[in-house]
Structures are given as structure tokens and as C-alpha cells.
Length: 212
Image (cartoon, rainbow, N blue to C red; front, top):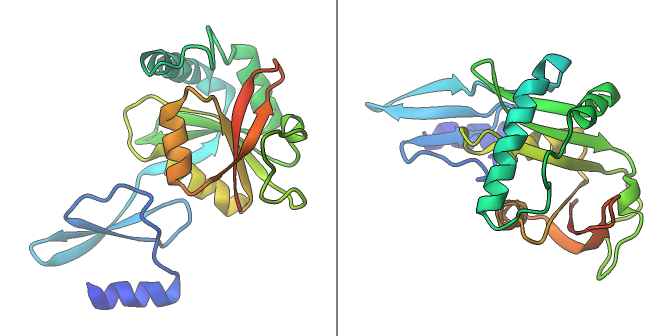
């Protein structure tokens, strides 16, 4: 295995440990969005491709997305964050608008939608003003992750989505509510830097992060 790992390291580079790895497995990065697992069983090693994938959202996915966001709001309330998405956010109309703009995506596993997010490359109007700090870089093109949520059934959704987004644009911004401790932990664990405070369109504060 050490010889194999050394070879892959020379060819493509070893993945940073952002996906949880079972104790009997070693992960090797062979594709930016589809991790492969080197599984050790009886001193033999087999490659098995992950079945988690990302694709653009379609209108047929909307009911699944509404269920995912309903679950996410319930979890936010349980975590002490009842106001970030409030009651019924995002609306069906917002989801349809995201699909129409071509910025909404879903994560699938075994053909079932298990998570969703919005990824926009280009300037975000809510990021034009930042207080209590500054962006790491305010000149380069950047991508922004919004409205990421899952059904709670799969682990490693955030790093998987982040890996995909980073393959599209290496300069990533994201924001979250100060009460969303779960998201803050995931963002900071992924080596984002806290840059300051921005305000959403309804004038509520969000902690702003960037990773270049």
C-alpha cells in the first residue's frame, strides 16, 4: 500500500483529510468530485468508486428540496438557531428562480437526492459591503456557496460539495448566521478565514468567510 500511495502522490497528489475515513480504509484522490476508496480486506486492496454525485437541480427535484429544507430548519431550531431561515425559507418560488438561473445543484446517492446547494460564480451584491474586517482578496473572481442543506442521512456532504465548488473556482466565499454553530464548525474546519460581517437583503447580519 505504501508503494501505491507514493505512486498516486507523485501522479495526482494525496487528498487532504476532509472526508471521514473508516479505520480499515485509505482514501486516494483520483478525481476532484468522485473520491475513490482503497479498501483493505484480507491483505487485498480493491478500488470502489463513491456513488455520491452532483448534478444541476431540475424542477422535478423541488419537492425533495422542500423536504430537505424543512428538515434543516428543524435541526436549526434544535441547535438554538431558530431565526436564520425562519418559517418556510427558502420558498418554492426561490427554488424555481435558482433553477431558472442555473445555479442550483443537488447531491445524489444511489439515485436519490440527499442534499442541495446554490453555487454562484461572480459578484454577490450582499458582499459589496463588509464591516469588522475585510476580504482576503477583493480583486479576483470568486464563487459563493449559498443554501447548502442535507436530509441528514449522509456524512461528509459539506466537504464533498466544497471540493466540487473549488474545482470550478478556487476562490470561495460563504456566510452563515452567528447562531449556526454547526455550520461555523464545518466552515472553519475547512480552513476558511473569518473576514468580517455582511448583511443579507433583509438586513440581517451574517459572518463572512473566504478561502483562496
